[in-house]
Length: 55
Image (cartoon, rainbow, N blue to C red; front, side, top):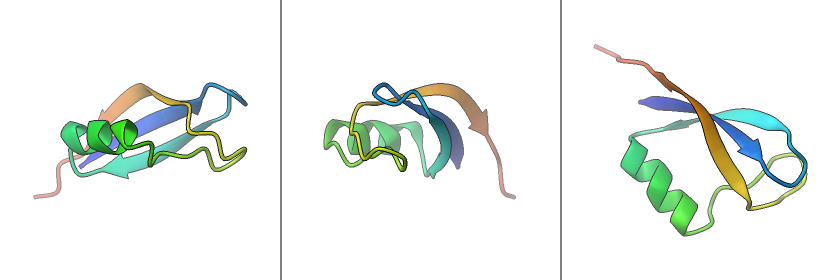
């Protein structure tokens, strides 16, 4: 699992979201499924990457 800190380019607020992989993030981004929870914009970028291993 990967936790990304995402940032909205429109309202400039940031929020965290978990993804099963970096490929999953890219796939959702390409399909414009990532949406800002504050302003509903689809112009989202990732900032800091957190990796967590569950074993």
